[in-house]
Length: 151
Image (cartoon, rainbow, N blue to C red; front, side, top):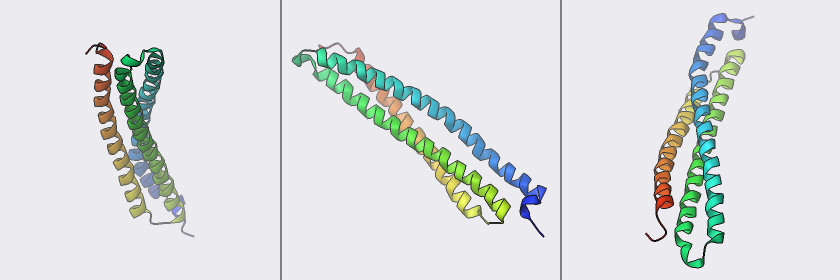
């Protein structure tokens, strides 16, 4: 009875193939932590600006409205980046699961795993581009927050 799951060489190959996905998950985990913290700060800042907006006289609300608009846009960018990053982790988890199932059940999962891993990497790359875009938006928000109401 030839059981692929009992062959130590095959098991070692699967474990080696799982190292890259595990490293990717660790890196994306740090990105998720950073993005979550940034989203929290955006939410806090939005609450402060909204409170200022409600207390401001009608003629001084334009700048605050613009700040809220920028904060809303930044929050959407962070949400997109978080979604892409979490999707990458989920895809890598599926890849690792398929690698082990392929070993244990004798399935050829090479093409599927390759496509899923490329999709995960694509999610990470797009998430990073969205994150960089949000960073540039944060500089716009900074400029708006330091402008005097008369500018």
